[in-house]
Every structure is written in structure tokens, then in C-alpha cells.
Length: 289
Length: 160
Image (cartoon, rainbow over all chains, first blue to last red; front, side, top):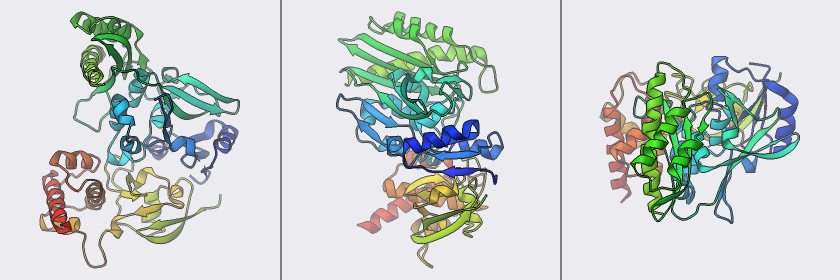
């Protein structure tokens, strides 16, 4: 353990410089709830740890002039929950973030870390994808934006380039009549890893669904944006036929693993069931907005 | 590589210690700082026996690097009693036998105190959810939850 270096820079430029210079042995520290477990188990032996929590962009939540939100990559779940407005506008994203771990974990764990950890079962990721969130990343060659669904590359891997750091999420302004929700299936009531996770964001106008996005987790090597399910929901009144079509699209998108947490058949079926339940909650919330 | 020098505040007192960059806060507490009230159960953030507060926020000290304590405000179980006078939660845990082997107890107390500071009137469900990250293999939780609820009621009454 003696060959580890720890840095906690005050600026993003310093962080990127150090992170890029250290190459593949470097790790970013936000809440540490994945990194410290991986270090302890010996899965990861970082040569350099770059703590990003002293960088203001990483730890702040801003409501933008157009009604959107910018959430710093290292904002802990508990801090997001205490924000006066975020949970009212994006209750589905908030409930997804807040499902990660215990009270203690919520005090540290961030949506940015959840995304960069690359788990197909990360709870915040399907909800962020459904929300249409854009990830801002910055590296030695400058800043760029990528839709959240383009970030995961496979279990434990992302499409961030060497030296790039996730800075923040941008969530778009909400039209009237919008709602979102996240549900996950786990064999117990809490403190568990999703067997299937489903995020839905939609907009209703006079009872007709005018926009929808569906994110599906833990059923493929990466969290999925299921465009076919959204298409089945848009243009109609969310009747049984539309819900059945969207559920079938979710099941059809599944390419899950078979393990002790859930079989392929079970995960595939549950993906459709969760889609219907999540849509119902999102639609109810949309009705109240 | 030289050790890191960390200046922090622990239970209201300035404190300094040396640590390796990869050491956890729990390593520092139990090692150079000699504060062994925080326990190592799982070392992976599942059991809550190492619970402390970091700038008033409940965290697992096993999931925090010791180096991160620089300039922060740390509170541990050792800061809970005022001299010989136990905190009402500690007193109630004793009276109601809300512990058996005691390994989880300091974490339970630190977590429960953080709850009552945030929410002086928690429901049973809120107590159970809040403490879901504190594992106890002895009590079955019932006595712990009841002790927290009774302490909350006592503290509300005392505050009136």
C-alpha cells in the first residue's frame, strides 16, 4: 500500500493533469464507496488517487435559468435529497440515487461514481438515461458532452478516454405534464443489488403521451436505453395495448446473465413487469405536474 | 514514500496524525489516534460498526481515506458522552438491554444520534430504514429500534 499517492486538487485542470499523467494506475475518488471496497479486496491497486471533492464544480447542484439542473459528479445522494427543488422536478432520478446502499453510503456515494463504476446494475443509471441526462466530461483534450447511455462500455468499463474525468450531469428543463420514476426488483426489501432496474420519464398532454424515455438496468452488459419501448408509449393514452407493447420491447431488449440473483428467463420477464409498474408511477406524477 | 500528515478536528478537539495514503479513516482512528470505539466488522461498508460523522454527515469510516479528514470535523462514539454523563441514547440502550455482544453498538449509537438530530420524531419505519446499514447479529433489532424511539420521545419531552 506504500506506493499509493493521494492528491486533492482545488481545480479541475490540476486534477486532469495529475490523473492523465498517472495513466491507467490512477483512480478518481468521489464518495469512495466502490473504490475503497475494490482496494480492500485487492481488485484495484491504484498508484494515484485523485480526490475530486475539493473542486466546486464536482460538488454543487445548480438549477439553470431554463429550468434544467446541473448536478456535480461527486454530489452525494444525501445532499441531492436535501436540495429544495431537485426531487420535486426529478423524483425518479432522486429515488434511484437514494436506493444506493445505506444511510452511511448515501452520505458519500454519488451518481457520478455510480456511472463511472460501470456496473450494469447501478441504480441511478437507468433513471438518468430515462431523464435524458447529458454527462459533461473533461480531459487533456478539453471538454465534451455525451448522453449518459453512451458512457457505459461493459461491466466495469466506460467510454471515457484516458485522462478524462466525469464533471457533471445536465438534466433538461421539464415541460408541463412530465413525470419520472425508477423501480428495481431485488429479492429483499432494501440494501441489495438490482436484478432488474427500470427508469421511465414521460410527458402527458390531455392524457396522451407526447414524450417518453425508458432506461433498463441489470439485464445486459450495459444499462440500456430502450427506444422501442418509448416508441410504443408515445402517441397513445398508455392503455393496455401500449403498455403490453412497451413491456414486450423491454423483454426483447434483454441480454441478461444467468446467476444466483436471477435467471435469464426471470430477468427477461421482470423487465416487462417493471416497465408497466414504473410507467404507472411516472404517469401519476405527470398528472400532478 | 513519506507518510501524510493530517490536521483535523475530532470530537471538537484539534487532532493531528500520520497515515499512509491508502489507510482508511478507521485505520487512523483505531491506530495512531487510539480511538478504538469504532469497530471494524466488514471493512466494506455493509455493517455500519465503524460509523462516524464527517462534517455532520453519517458515514462508514472504513469507506473513507484517512487523508480525507484534513480540515474536516470528525465525530466518533468517544465524543458522545459528556464526561461521566452518558448521552440519553447510551443510557436507554443500557436500560432496555438494546445490545448483547456490543460490537455493533457504537455504530448503532452514532447512527441513531445522527437520525435524532435530523429527525427528532422518527416513525418506527424511519428508524428501521435509517439503521438498515447497521447490522446486529444478536438482538434481532427490536430492542434497538424501541430504545431509539423511546429516547426520541424522552428528548422531545426534555426539550419542552
